[in-house]
Length: 263
Image (cartoon, rainbow, N blue to C red; front, side):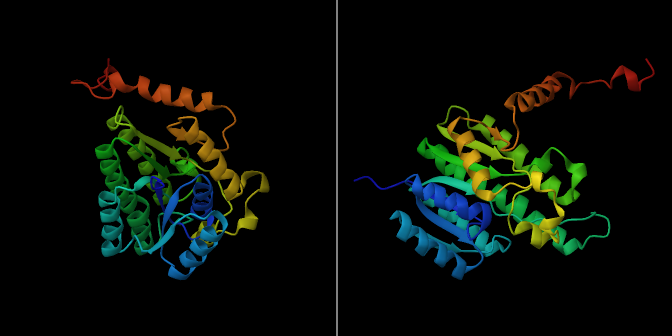
């Protein structure tokens, strides 16, 4: 019997990451689960082993610490059994950037951008070399609506979206699948960490993590590069992306536009 493909999931101890772990185990993946809490990872791993019969390895790591990040990155580059990365770990910070604690902003950038980039690049390199693999980067709809939340958080998720789009172009024809998932408000502990009371959010805006992940996986199965789980009509995204691409020929020219030169 050939070994089962392994999915490595970051931020796996709760919320979106834990749901991805459960859904992927039921799809036939063995798992490597990454998060800070060894106890919570082991509890989840034991439950998933019992419920699904899959092999589940807890890999405790704080991806804001360089030595932990490099350890997970090395595993992604060297373990040929890994066929999927769900790059989900992240933190949020609510409120204005002006006056925010710079240490908290830096920690958010460290996890949401640097760790996501290094792990995504490591996974992509391994998958390309093997001619197969799936990279899922969890971003946020705030990548498209930065005025609606903390600019550091929205900016970090805009990075994840742009990084994913660029990787998809780079890996075209390589056999590697790439997806950016842009959830809206989802009922997870990230809000508490950001200092936001979930009860303050309109119920019609708040999605359960199980439904969000199921929609994201359906988008992956459908071959979507960008999945926005709550968007009713995919054509809305397609029109927006087409408008962005239409700017291309005029984004870099050897002269300033006539409107800036008094013409």
